[in-house]
Image (cartoon, rainbow, N blue to C red):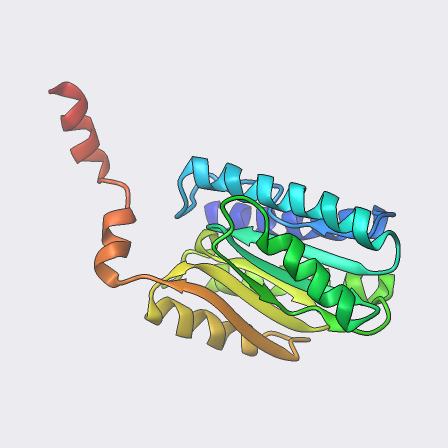
Length: 212
């Protein structure tokens, strides 16, 4: 029952993403609005990422108006730009706006210079994102909450603070998912020792610490 509930949660989140993309009338779709309880970022960093997305989205909307379709996702202060813009100048301008935001470490600019994707394409991208998340959940050796999955025109972008082993395994899983045209890795790699340090202490250890 626990496994089924987790899988249902992934599907619900994917549906929410789809609904948001279909109902949005503006140019900007801001990723990362929902914070997951189990996250390898601190709470403060999660809030910073959310603020980076919101500030950058507002500036890009002012700059582009309705002339483009831009997705802005920040993970651990690393910003991914996806979507479509009408010109090379607009592409450079959006990157400049994102990189100028406070606390941004670096920007990965994957914006395509072409016409905006259709609602049908965006809904298909949302379904692909849901499939990839479900596939990651199906594995027994990965924590789905360690990954941020973004899909644009069938291209899947994987973000997160993960080890080399986790990065390779997640890439393999995403590539095997139906509808995925290509996988782009935007990971921040950590060591296995760093991963162990991020893990919460066992319940027994935490209980002993409280008693002391």
